[in-house]
View (cartoon, helix red, strand yellow):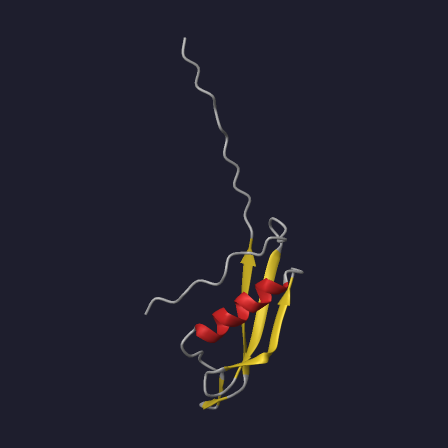
Length: 93
């Protein structure tokens, strides 16, 4: 099964600096929306996008202890890369 990628980095992301998001995964594989933590951005819309992404993933696999599913944490890190394109002018002679 192909999984969706997390949202693109927010508009205020600093090149090379990570933006992280984490959320609690319950033993049944669902997520607890009230535990979402996003760090590295002040963009409130990005937190909403991350919550939607965490929620849309079909089922998360909770951690296990002695074979039993337990509350655990899922996280993702997104880093902006700087891509520079050089435009060259072609001159006809």
